[in-house]
Image (cartoon, rainbow, N blue to C red; front, top):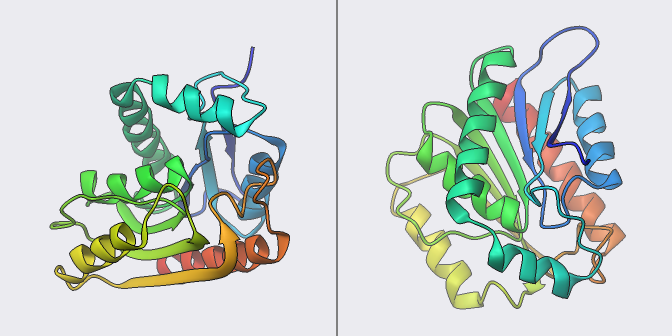
Length: 209
């Protein structure tokens, strides 16, 4: 049976919390490795299994799995994970970092729990929600070509966030596709992934510590 979540804290004691929301591939080896690196940087990290126990091996299978998933169950998992992590973090507030569908849920959570989320990082995720009320700062990494996020959708999201005068940084990675930071994806781009990850860790460090 697969683990339902991966939790790791710095050896010196609780640090600022980071909720790590993986893409549709679930709790992969690369997700655990990145969670470990966040812990080494001083963060307390919780990564729930958004694949809900499934282990897709192709993007087609992962896409079908996501289409069949209960959105209310996913939302409940994310909210309960955020609440649990806030209790275990050093400050009671957290940052959230997500890839793909996890990135979309990260943006949603920043609106859903404004008193808990102080920083949100999304890699190729999007939301068409009203961002009024959120207290988070945002870092959004987008692929140049994304079959899930059109340029109009990305522009609308950025404009919607701009209406609230939020602190938002949007980075587009040239010659990349959706999934560029997931080693399991055929769109994986190691150079772009490293740049996005370094930027994400620096952003979370600046906003949460």
